[in-house]
Amino acid sequence: MTNLRRTGSRLALWTVVLLVPLGMSCQRLPLERQEVLEPSSRSRPSLALWELATRLGLTIGANDSVSVTLRNANDTVLLFTHAGAQFFVNGRAAGYVGPTERRRGVLYLESALVGRIGQQMGRRAVTRPAPYERPRRLGSGKGTIMIDAGHGGKDPGAPGLWGYPEKSVNLSVARQVAARLRDLGYRVMMTRDSDVFVSLEGRWQLANRYRPRLFVSVHADSSPRPAAEGFTLYIAHGASAQSRRAAQCLEDALAGTGRPGRGIRSAGFQVLIHTTCPAVLIEMGYLTHDREARELRDPRVQARLAQAIVAGIECY
Ligand SMILES: [Zn+2]
Image 1: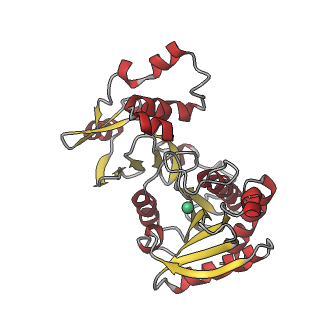
Image 2: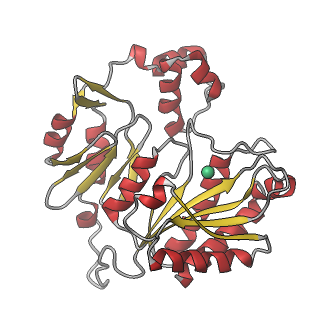
């Protein structure tokens, strides 16, 4: 990403935004194909937000600089408005927003979004259980947990000693945590589940909108001191008793992985101080420590960490 930013080429960045959701690699595409996909040869986002809402039969609710909520009696759609961000339908990550643009204060999106969102609406009605199944109420059972994989997209987080940036470690562990929790019957939301940039505001606003039972932010640490090692739990200054209990549970569970613990600390991280639900940030270990950096990129170690985080959440 650094190279793209250095060239300052908006088009190059847009190409990535368009290609990443399709799972394609920039290098492998023949040049003419890239040109076809570049927004310069496509029209700019032309669908005004009000038009999108009208076509989907939704009204515009909360609308700020990072996100928009659209709703009707049956469906709630949350769009993050930076290019490459995700949209959520009824609390479920349902796809990517694609290119966005604000012109004279009006948000424009690509018209294909009508179909992409429309497909996901009314899902609860469509997947109404068969006669013999007992209907499962949303949010029932073990409740909702929000997993926040730190950094992503243009923000790599701490650079790994072994060329494996923090954003990748975080995402890999966060995905495993989410999958295991779903197996255990939790409703799980992720602030990102691919390599996209989501602002800090976007993260805590999502938490405050969906009010999960617990918000867990997953990170890996760095230090100018190469000997620094171990995991750390963070909660907000003056955090609630629930946040403290969750941090304690997570600390105990992570201690079982055999790595040194650096305790529960309080900090002014945005995702901790602005979230209204119980929230904990985990620094799983140091990417600047020779051994820990090697471990953190090891899939077996990542699986153990994910298992420990799930055990901590279960305890909470
Ligand atoms: Zn981080």
